[in-house]
Length: 271
Image (cartoon, rainbow, N blue to C red; front, side, top):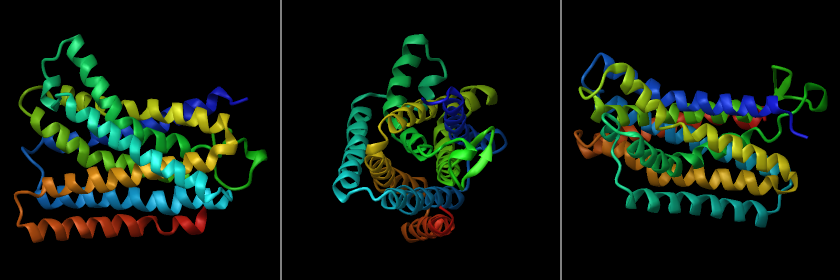
């Protein structure tokens, strides 16, 4: 039986990650824009963190649990396909952040459906990373808090996605600046990532329910994360630097990616 307190912790972790999006809106309270080099660098760092956490965290966990290549690989492919499908759905539905400025209830519902499809895979990675949560006496390792031993991977994945959400929050808030108050802009940015804690709780429930398919869950989350990095995060980074010379934008993006990836390498020594 899964204790309901564990679900609360997973939900809070998802909300912490989502908070990164609203944090990205805060600089726009004081300036009209964010320097392109900084924005590109942040996208690179986010991509590096997510990629490294997927390799040294999720896939390494599957290896530690002696999951078969077929099970983990199948999950990996399906995770990537989920993101491909999500992108196809989002492309067919018209949505832009400024639509939330004067949206009625029906418009907000439509926007939420788009955001649910877009952000849900990121929440899955958080939920899967909590799969090994247990009571302190039941396992060794992890970080003991609120009566649970929380896997280090869960903290790492939450931080990685929170950092990823910061430049996403900047990109979301820029079109809204001047069209709504700072408080509403902050709230709208946070709203765009609300599906993440929902995805986290759903994924956590299923991996706890079927422990024998844990390797599939790790592979699924890693596939979704790595495809997001390749098809979403890094291209977004280049787009954020479109005002810069191409070589400069690529250099800042590459530098941020290497920095983010390297920051997660010690993970393999502590998990």
